[in-house]
Image (cartoon, rainbow, N blue to C red):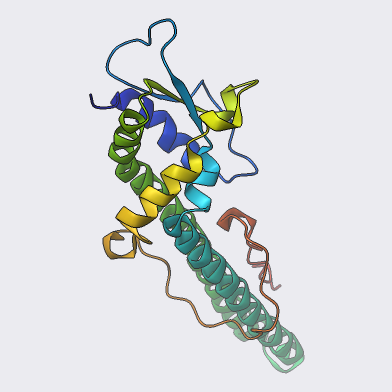
Length: 227
């Protein structure tokens, strides 16, 4: 019997959050086509570990880390360049007429605003990539979880976050990851979302800890306001 698709929408919604912040809006469960009867088998799965420990999830995590780090490096390069140009323009002020200075200052401030908007769009694009890939992952794994559930003779699959107590033997996460890895691999062939085009980081020595793109340092450029 196929899994109820209503449960999938909740799965995708939760998947779009980071492991540290994803709230459980309602009990999440993949259930078979009819209600479980008394005494029927219930199994559990850790949704976060299912994604982040799979080859698919590890590939997405690595791409997000690389893109976020590259964006931070690009932001810093832009900030350094604009700060230097701002200082040069300020130093020229005594040698320019008020009108000439105002023209150059207005042009500089406009450019700062354009660059800030561009960098913010890149940050959002990284977040959209993560959301799209997690959503695609859960779409692809539902049939695999359905088959796994039938293979073990169970009727209901619950997220571990809604289970207070359970025997470790009822958890199917490791079995599910093995089946997902064998079937989907890292999922790179089906990617439809894109990451922004970013320059390589300047410093390759110290890799950052995994984090969501929202954690990337915002671009703090000189505020438009040269007077």
